[in-house]
Length: 181
Ligand SMILES: [Zn+2]
Image (cartoon, rainbow, N blue to C red; front, side, top):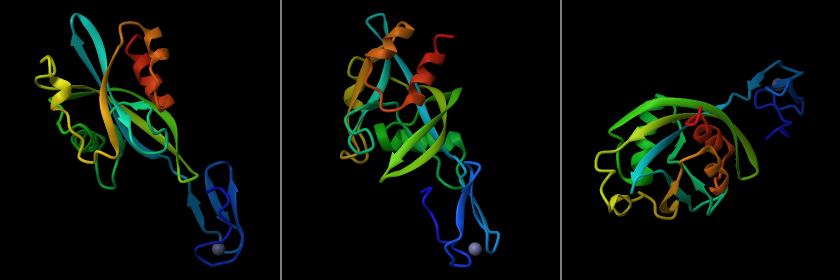
């Protein structure tokens, strides 16, 4: 993406990437800002047999196929972070959260088709009605079963537990760490 050379306005090969934040045309002075994309993630703690567990999805697509992530995704144009959280959650696990509260935010690099998308990931703590039932995981269903390979609960009783989770993204590590502050 940073290799963009041709100006979409004047068509000349005069674009350069400036100050790690914008493409600028020396000919017509067009500026295209490399703004971060907003994304959301839902951190859900589910108690099972007296142990706190974190709810994770197994990714079915690149980047980071087969790695684990919290449910979430990019905020669509015109959406609030809260709306995106509800929509992405429904798409990925088939449920809308009962309640969400802001947790923290963290930067992330989402590499898709060789393009680096720098995101600002906004994390919410989420609760779900019926999450204390024994077969809660069996109730979950992704809209697109190619995108999500499955659902997992990982024990999360101390900060060190995070290291043993094969997480897809650094920002989720930051979010889970913030639970122990
Ligand atoms: Zn130009």
